[in-house]
Length: 322
Image (cartoon, rainbow, N blue to C red; front, side, top):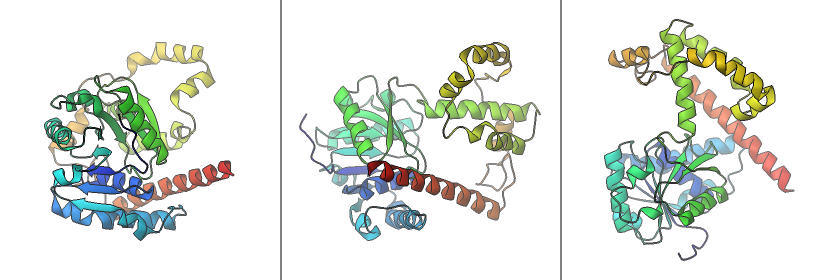
């Protein structure tokens, strides 16, 4: 494989929230990015959304490394996939979570892109091996699962499919590290990878607690926010288990695991809410009631928290580099 010059040329397929965010990451780090989507409305508003994100980050004390307009000038857009694929070193797919759609896109990418282009999927749960199934050069297809919002959350899971080549995985990992992300290797391609398996295991138990009437929905969130959730940013479950002692952890598991939900089907309360149109923010009612002001406050609280964390990490990194 030829060596790829830096900065690499990036193509992003899908101009939704994740695609816009991934585009922002690479443009902010000096890369020319071509964003493509068949939806003209999403494509047309993408740069304005990136500008809004960058402006908010700058106001929050984050050093963008360049003028906002300079970053935006690195972003080009086209509705034509073939045009977007002509001269790129990496493609990041960020379309709707539909296996057939992703298979079709990767088959097209494999046919249209230069032979050295690395093809990455941002799927949050679908098997990368399945996504690559209809492509000829499956050795250059790898999973790169960003988390929303991708420009503020550092983690990217790099998932090796059954036929992904070593050089492909290492190249994707290296690129992500160089643009300031926190990539991790996922060695086995399983649905949900690592992060979403952990996240949805917690959600399953949370919803089961509501199903069983152990407490109300708001209390579930109170317990997490004001209890073990406070430790999670600095103390993961593995380190925590070592800290308290694996003998104690084993004793607790021997007692409690048989009482924890292991149902392979979704929560009955969750299903009932969806069936009656109680979809959360989308409808103003989910497990909780949501007025417009409540939804705005929730989004604002999350954004401010993530910006503050990002800014603090940036300050610490600069301090360590001195």
